[in-house]
Each structure stands twice: as C-alpha cells, then as structure tokens.
Length: 191
Image (cartoon, one colour):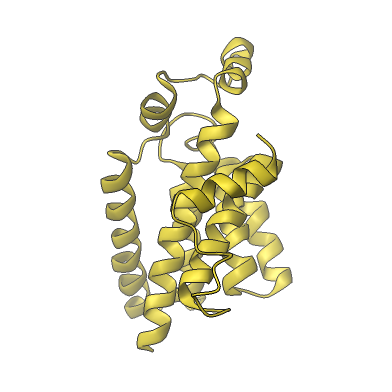
C-alpha cells in the first residue's frame, strides 16, 4: 500500500483532514494531521515510538529542534515493545514521552509537575489499553496479525513484513498519536 492509499484509507476511516467543513488549524485537523504523520512516519522509517513522537512534535511544537533531536535519539530503542522484546507498545511510550515534553519539568524538584504528568500519562495509558485491549506489543501483534513475532529471528522478522505488519502497526502509531494530541490540545485550551 502506497502513501496515497494509506492516507485515503485513513480518510475513509473518519479522517477530516481534507474537509472544508472544519476550519484550518482546528483541533480536529491537528489531531488528524498527527495521526496521518505518525502513520506515514512508521511506514517510511519504522520505530513506533520515534514515529509517534516526531509526528506530535511536528504538528504541536513540543520542543525546540535541538532538544527534539535528542528526544528522537533517546526513543530509538523503544520500538516493538522496548528493544523489540514485545513488551509495552512503543507507540504508547512515544505518546507518553510527548506528554512528558509538554507537561513535565526539567526541574526535578517540581513534584507538582511530576504528579501532573503521571496523571495525564495514565489517561493516555488507559485510553490506549481500552482501545487495543492491551498495552503489550506482542498481544497487539496477535490481535492485529494473528500471531506474535520474535524480531530477533530472521524468519519472524520477514514474516512480519509478508503478513502485513507494515500495514497494521502504522495504524497503532496513528491511534496513539491521535490520542496523545487530543489530550495535549484539550489541556492547552484549559490553560
């Protein structure tokens, strides 16, 4: 599936990105743009955490470019359930990292920011878990693709591609990106 087909599918699934009935720059269009970007990033570059984080920063401007470069670098090994181990979904972790950038603090004595960010991240965790039925990468793989993959085995890694992994997992990134964007934008309005 090419990028045009991927975006067309997102639009069929409820996307309003190209709609003239919703104002440019609106929250709905920003959420949709993040979802499409996260989806496209994962198709092009892979690495769910960094793909979600990059999409959120691109459209919501979470940090400066230099600071963001370091965040992307730090998120590299979070993909496929933390270092390809099938544990907590990297797309979710990328969203949690974005929430930390938006609501956390560099000042470690700011316990108020620590607890606020934990509560906000819990909201994302619960929404993601409720949507996918789990937060565990290997279980999401099984739900979407019918089985789990061990990315350290060549045959499983190859099978993931052949069995539609690069079609299904970007959708998880799109969902995590959209959920995170909704949370960030809703709180920006309140502040």
